[in-house]
Length: 285
Length: 230
Image (tube, rainbow over all chains, first blue to last red):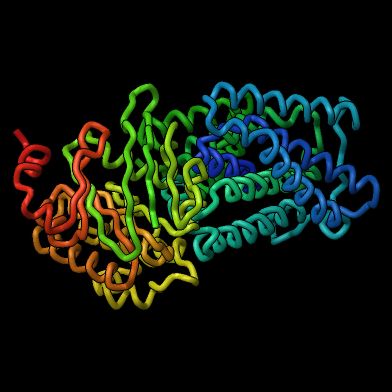
C-alpha cells in the first residue's frame, strides 16, 4: 500500500513539473494561436544552464535564481526577433521554424556540454530523507512539490488579481478586442512568451538534481506538455494544473503497476479525456 | 475631427468600400445608414485599423491614422463597440471595465456606475452571466472609460427589447452631453432620427446621400429608395 502512496506523491511532484512546462505552452497557444515546438528546448536549456552554474559556483540556489531568468530572456529574444514574424503564418510554418530552433538549441547544448548527460548534485540542505514513522521520502522531492505549489499559487494570484492577469485572460478570448481597448497585444505576447520560457527553464532546473540534464530531454517533455495542454484545455491555467497532475500521477502509478506501459497510459488517459470532454477538462467552447 | 477620404477596403479579393468619404465633427452624433452588406461595419473596421484600406486616407485630429495598428488608433481616442459587443465572458464586469480604464478619461468607474446602475449591481458577475442588454451597456461603458474623443457604435440596439432600446438611446444622449462625438451604425431608423445631427447613407460601398437632421426628415424619397426593404 505504501508503495502506491509513495508513487502518488512522486506523481504529484512530476505533475507539478509537467504543469510548469505546459502552462506557458498552453497560454501561448490560447492567446496567440501559436504552436511552439521549441518549448521543450527551453526546458532542456534551463536544465543545462542550471548544471553550468552549479558546476561553476557549486551553488544550486544561485543556479535556480539565475538560470530561469536567463531562459526568460532567451524566450523574449526568440519571440521578439524570430517567432513574432510567424503569428500570421499557417501552423505548419510555425512548426517548421520552432522545430528548427529546438534542434539548434539541442545541437548547441551538445556542442558545449557534450552528448552524454550530466548529473547535478542535490543541494546539501536537501540531501537525505524525511522520516514520518514508516513513511520515508527524499527531502528534495518534497521541496520540489512545496516550491512549485507556492509558485503556482503566486502565479494564480497574478493571473486572477492583477490588471495584467485580466488582460491575459481577456487575450485568450479575443486579442482583437484587447487591441480595440488600446492595449499593445504584441508587448503582451512578448511578456507572456518570456514568462512561459521562465517556467519551462525553472522546470528544467528543478528536475536536474532528480534525473540530471540530458541533451535529448526536450522532445519527450514537449510531447508530454502537448498531452497536458490537450487534457486540460487550450489556454487554461487551471486546466494545465489539473492535466499536469493527472498525467504525473497516472505515469507514476503505472510505473509500479505495469512499468512497460507507463508512457503509453498517458496517451490512453488523454484519449479517455477527449472522448468525454473534447475541449479538455477545463476547456471552453 | 474625423475625416475619411475616399477609402477603398477589401476582404481578401472582394472589394467592399469603393471610395467612402465622410466626416464627424467635434461633439456631433452622425449616423451611417444603409442596407445589410452596404459596407457600414467595414467602414468602422477601416477607421480603427482592423481592416486596412488599400487607397484613400483617414485623418483624426489632423493626423493620418490609416495604416497604424489598432491599439494605437484606440490610444489616439477612437473607441469601437463592435456588433457582437466583445464582452470578455470569463472576466467580471468590473474587470472588463478595469482593463480598459484610462486615467485621462472623463468617464471613470464612478461615473459609469452612476449612469449604469445595473452594471454596479452586477459588477462581480462574469461577462457570460449578463443579458444581451447588460452586455451592450457594459460594452458602451467599457468604451467610455477608455477615454475616447469619438465613439463608434455598430448596431447598439440590435436584438434588444424596446425598453432596453430606450435606455441605450438615453445613454448615447448622455455620451453626447459629455462632449464625445458618436458615429452610429443603426438599423432602427427611429433611433437614428432621434439622436443624429447628420446622416450618411451607404449603398454598395459608396456614400449615396448625406444630409442634416432637418433635410433627412423631409427626404422621404431618399429613405424610400435606400433604406426600405423591398
